[in-house]
Image 1 (cartoon, rainbow, N blue to C red):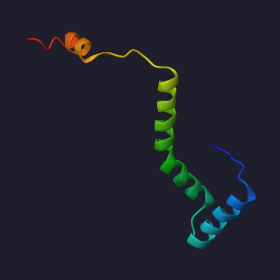
Image 2 (cartoon, rainbow, N blue to C red; image 1 turned 45 degrees about the vertical axis):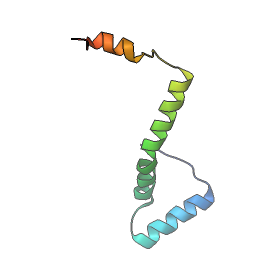
Image 3 (cartoon, helix red, strand yellow; image 1 turned 30 degrees about the vertical axis):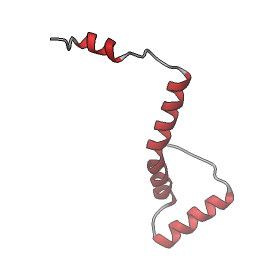
Image 4 (cartoon, rainbow, N blue to C red; image 1 turned 135 degrees about the vertical axis):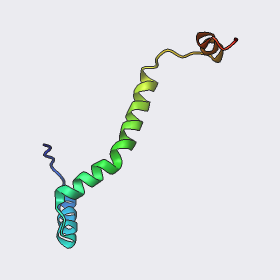
Length: 70
C-alpha cells in the first residue's frame, strides 16, 4: 500500500485522464511508476557505485584468476 500527496495540478490531470478513459487514477499512477522505475534504479545504482567504488581488476588479473593461459 502506498499513499502519496500530489500537487493539485497533477491530481487534476490524473483525475481528468482517468475520467476520460474509464480507468482509475491508481492504474495510471502504477503505470507511471513502472515506466520510470528501471531508469531510476539504474541511475541511483550508478551514483552509488561512483560514490562507493568496489574492487577493480585489470585484464591481466582476470585472466590469471580464470587460468586462461592453458
